[in-house]
Image (cartoon, rainbow, N blue to C red; front, side, top):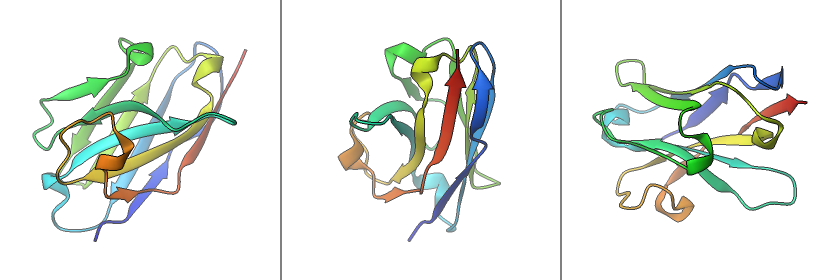
Length: 124
């Protein structure tokens, strides 16, 4: 069983930065693929970024490439999402997810565990 707790959300002006953190419980954190998803009001949950256990393989949705960076620290059981050059369209609740048999990192159904989410609001 894995429990995930996100933090770092908040209100920021367009062009600003935030760093989200996701702390995971459990001794097998390093084996999981970790992902970030987001959901804006009235929209479906969408993939943002993912990282495999080694930290070498990363994946991003096109709209955040070059602006967001996902990373992980297996010793601290934590995954991060550094978000730069934020845009109002990035406003959403951001969720951390963990999966142990993820083949397609962009598919929410492939993740076993989810956090409660943290709100990110970008003002124009």
